[in-house]
Amino acid sequence: MEQTAAVPVGGAIAEQIREVERARLRALVAGDIGAASELHAPDFQLVTPVGHVLSKDAYLRAIATRDIDYVEWEPGPIDVRVLGDAAVIRYQATLEVIFGHHRVPRASYWHTDTYENAGDQWQAVWSQATAIR
Image (cartoon, rainbow, N blue to C red; front, side, top):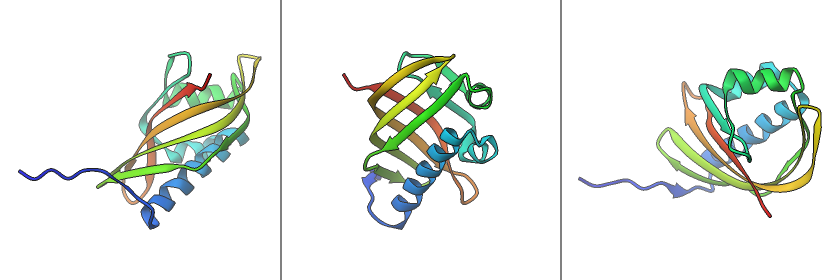
């Protein structure tokens, strides 16, 4: 059986996924829960830089209550790999956030996100951030 490999993509699909990721970040920084909800799959999970796992509901509730308050989230170039209706993106970003009223100083992080295309809409399924030291 021939296996199909995910490949880096530079065309329209990759740019669509990059724009969805940028829209997701803008919604999270703005605290726009309606927009953010549409950009996260129902079974979305976030793994934070300290290893906590948050479901979509817990994550968006924390954004809504400002327990997680993104002050700044500036992504660098976003690498995209696509295989059918799944994609993985990876990029470095500058991030400043307030967790539970504790300001985390601006720092650089690697972000890796998995996307799925459900009904002609790309949604984030898994997200993981790792601090760059």
